Image (cartoon, rainbow, N blue to C red):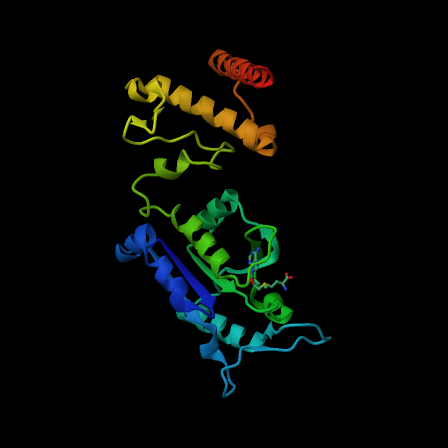
Length: 258
Ligand SMILES: C[S@@+](CC[C@H](N)C(=O)[O-])C[C@H]1O[C@@H](n2cnc3c(N)ncnc32)[C@H](O)[C@@H]1O
C-alpha cells in the first residue's frame, strides 16, 4: 500500500461510491492506494445520533459538535497506531493547488480528510486535531465531501502505480506552471474541423515544439497571473520560440482589429 486516505463524513456511501470508480477504484483493487470512509454519526453518544447543535452566541443553522468528530478521528489514528496528518476542508482554508497535491503526495503516506456540514465545525475540534485547512476555492458549498474527493483524487493520481507512467501527470496543466496544449483524437476531420496537420506528421520533435508553443500561448492568454511567474531558458531555441509566439499573437490581435 503506497497511500492511505481516511475520509470522515456524514455521507460515507456517496463518497465511497465515487472513490471506488474508474482509475482510483482500480488502483485500490491493485493495492496501490486505499480510501476508507467513516460515518461521523457512528461516534455520537446521544440516542438520536445527533452530530450538530445550535451555535453559542446565536445565529442561524447548526454547528457540528467536537465530540463525535474527535472520537471518529481518534479511532482512525488508533487503527493506524499513530497520529495521522489531518486536513479539514473549509472555505476558510488555503486554496488548494497542484503544488499542494504534490506536497501531500510526497510528504505523507496517510491522510485524514474531515468533511464539515451545516454551518461548520466546533473550533475546538479543529484546534485539537487538525493540522491544516484546505479550501477548494472562494465559494461556499453545503459540505466538505466534494472538496475532500477533489483533494483525494488529486493526491492519489500522483501516487506511484496509480497512473501507468509519471509522464501521465508531468505533462499536464499546472505541473510546471503552464496550461496544457490542445488535445485531439480521431477522426482527422469532424464537422469540418481538421486536426492541426503537424500532429499527423509523425515528427516528434516538431510536435513537442508545437505543443510547448500552444501551452505558452494558452497560459499567456488565459492565465496572465501564471504567465508572469514563468521563467524561460536563455537559449537560441527558446528565444526563437518566444519571438514566434509574439509575432503570432500580434498577427491575431491585428487580424481581430481589421
Ligand atoms: C456551508 S459550509 C460552512 C461555511 C462556513 N459557515 C463559513 O462561512 O466559512 C459547510 C461545510 O462545507 C465545507 N465547505 C464549503 N465550502 C468549501 C470550500 N470552498 N472548500 C472546502 N470546504 C468547503 C466545509 O467542510 C464546511 O464546514
